[in-house]
Image 1: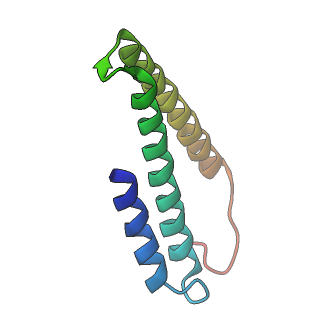
Image 2 (image 1 turned 180 degrees about the horizontal axis):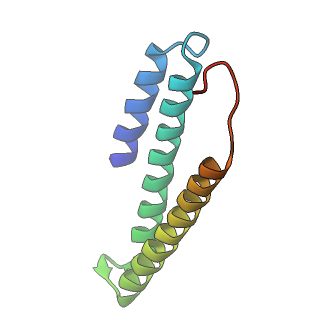
Image 3 (image 1 turned 30 degrees about the horizontal axis):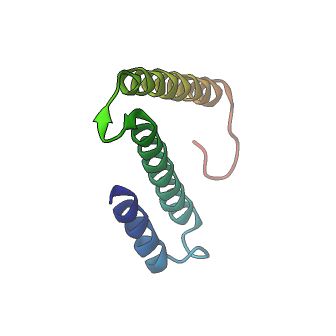
Length: 97
């Protein structure tokens, strides 16, 4: 159900936006929609693999903890890498201060 709502929200928004007049906003909304869909699919897969005959198993806790640690680590590494890149890179152009 969450995947349907997340997909519908971004698709409806993208139909209103024009990619030629606001390309940055269009790209941000499109990326946010893709991330929402990916998270929904991964969580659904984790819950589906963790249940057996409708009962929760011990593998659910391990699978959830593994996904949590891996996702947090990947997000932190990418965030720190981009922060370092933006701090050390000098941008030049007509719109830069």
